[in-house]
Length: 243
Length: 286
Ligand SMILES: Nc1ncnc2c1ncn2[C@@H]1O[C@H](COP(=O)(O)OP(=O)(O)O)[C@@H](O)[C@H]1O
Ligand SMILES: [Mg+2]
Image (cartoon, rainbow over all chains, first blue to last red; front, side, top):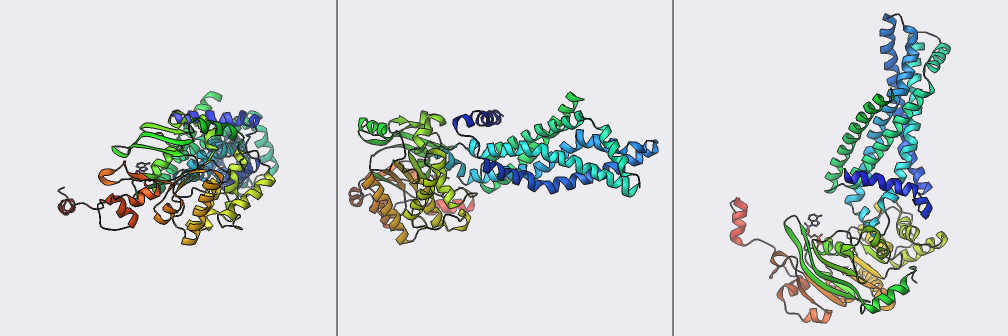
């Protein structure tokens, strides 16, 4: 826990102080990580959000129609995507896809002495390996969440239009009207917190792997579990604080 | 060619401490309840090539790891250029680390970078060399280890012996005052071994670099060594069982040393349990 806290401090140090010492992060490396963490994760997040939107709309339309409130399906989909499901589902995808990959990659570097070699060359592993991944994750976490929100809305629209045969225009108007900017921002704030937790946990666990290939495997599982728990707990806490 | 800016200061310091570059005093390292290094003492002087010999698993790599300040010993002192590195923080160690190169037993090349990028890494991160010149230095270093033209391959695409040579090129990238290498010639053919040995000799004898080399290869050890120590194993685990100049080592009658140098299967080096113990061990009653 102590070491995890120190990692966070060190990341902030290199982010804030680094550029003044001409030791800022390398732009090319940040972009490489953005592509790996974010862009390559887009299809998976989009698909998840789409199916979540579909399911949500189907469930909602049955219950709401029974209650005579079938008109509120778009409101339901857009608000729950933005406030809750968009950030949460996206971060689960990021944990599974990118968090585990980061842990496995850093863990392998640790057991094959690469991290030690960096330290001996007076290169700080946190500055060199963690900071680019951190920046990439902090940018791509919220960005993927925005994409997911819209794919969720598309999922809802498919049910609305193709299954129930209702109008597209009314779906768009209703879903945009019901969700406020506050809903969007609170979701984005959540997704930034989740991104922070995921990237710091997966880097921390990866950098501290012990015991060969088997250790890397165990660490990867551990990092996924820890990140999921951290995201779920912080999600509940943030929801309690904000709403 | 020295890229380091405070080399004049270091030269002054070397003279003050009578040219002792490394001084190890009563070094003890334990892993759990196993004592791997047990009271090691030695000195390495400027321009020396110190050879560390010993059977597999006797603690040679562990010793090298201590010398580069990568792990902290259980007790004892390690002085590099007069500074006790066992009491220094990571931050204090960095200026010292920029003056030495380390070749890891596994090579420890960064798998995600190409060979060229691996060699340029210390240059780009730790020196103010112009990026245009970095390319040139990378080519020169690769030429030194006989790997011209391989700069765009990834470490996964080359053989073990080639990785060793790339790792050597990387260790030499900043023209270190001090080179540590862990089995630099393991996995190399005899010709390449001779090339690497000649490189080490040139750097130490002509440019005054100091080297600490772990090796099993006796031909190579006698070719490059100016001082040799042998670590014991079994009941002698963690002790230096013989040391001296190559001439002294050649004349040393110690039977364990003779067996090791001549590469004989029979001799006093403990490899197996005694007959009785072996049966007990097999039957699980020992
Ligand atoms: N991190 C570690 N944890 C526990 N034991 C270790 C560790 N590193 C090395 N050892 C043990 O220390 C001994 C010396 O290892 P090493 O220095 O790698 O030997 P070698 O002389 O072959 O280079 C071995 O018996 C090994 O099992
Ligand atoms: Mg070794």
